[in-house]
Image (spheres, rainbow, N blue to C red):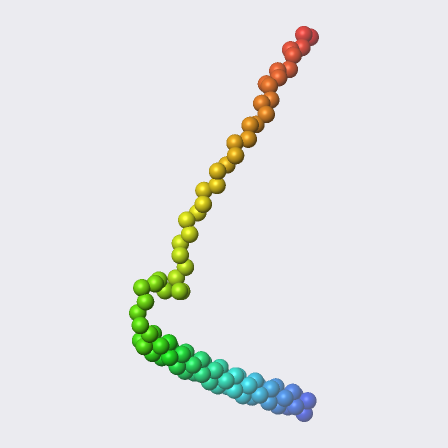
Length: 95
C-alpha cells in the first residue's frame, strides 16, 4: 500500500522530470536558431566579400592575408675562451 508521502514524492519527481524535459527542448530550439542565424550571417558576409573581390581590379601584389616567410637571421656567436683547468693528479700515498 502506497502512502501519501510516497505519492507526493513521486508526483514531485515526475513534475521535475517534465520541467527538465521542457527546458532541454527549449535549449535545443535556441541552439538551433542561433546556429541558423550564424550560418545566414556567414553566407551574407561571404556573398558581400565575393562581390567586392569580383568588382575590384586584380592587383599584382601578394594577398594581404599571407604572411611573408622571414629568413632566420644567423647570429654570430662570439667565441669565448674557456679557462683551462690543469689536470691535477692527487699525489700517491706511501702507506
